[in-house]
Picture 1 (cartoon, rainbow, N blue to C red):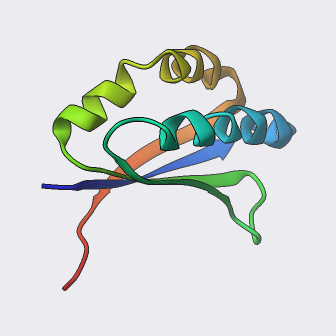
Picture 2 (cartoon, helix red, strand yellow; picture 1 turned 90 degrees about the horizontal axis):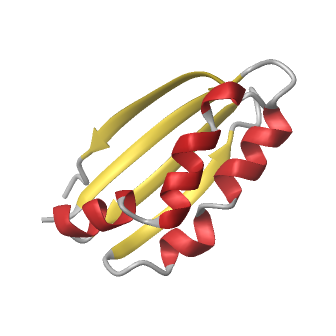
Length: 95
């Protein structure tokens, strides 16, 4: 069963560019991972401090592989100083 998530990040005031850089660096390597069906980062036009990652993985094993990747480790160890808030929602595709 596929897994789709949205992860919302609120950058600290003045940290928008650094947050954009860190999140953007995740796109190419994540898309290259086995089991990645969709992976994009969005920045809200009406609130430049707000970013959203939308990702779809083939299954739990693919998502676990993503979380074990070197680029994920860099992101996890780097984003917190630039982020005011972060939350994740699991999404269901309507049919």
